[in-house]
Image 1 (cartoon, rainbow, N blue to C red):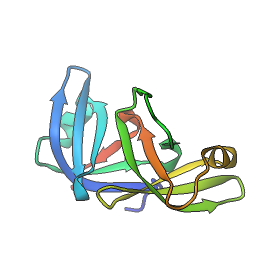
Image 2: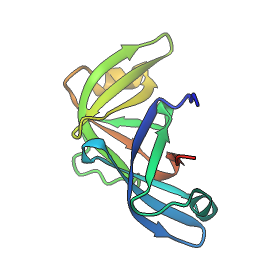
Image 3: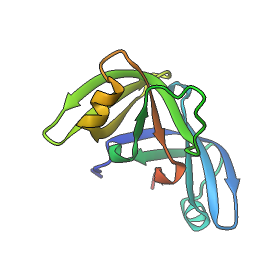
Length: 142
């Protein structure tokens, strides 16, 4: 299957919290980075989600926010993955920013040119990829 999501991470479910409406799923990906997803309870059952199960987490680059200075800032977003900018690619409309995470994974964000300039983004700059748990789509092997 081909997919348009720029960020595709494989890992194992390391924790799960079932609720009557939604299920919170913690995925540990290569290098130890963790991603939190929230899916409907029905999806959790249909996918057979359980601790230890292999899973793929998909996040569109347009769902990723980039933060460079979060000193004292508390966010409701469950996913705040720190790293360093590894690449900045300027396009005709937007800029793609790649952030190398501590565990070695790379996450891509699509942001405006103005945000790129305001944040002073360039290779080597510390940055955090921020995204909400409901923005994560989960898939399991068939």
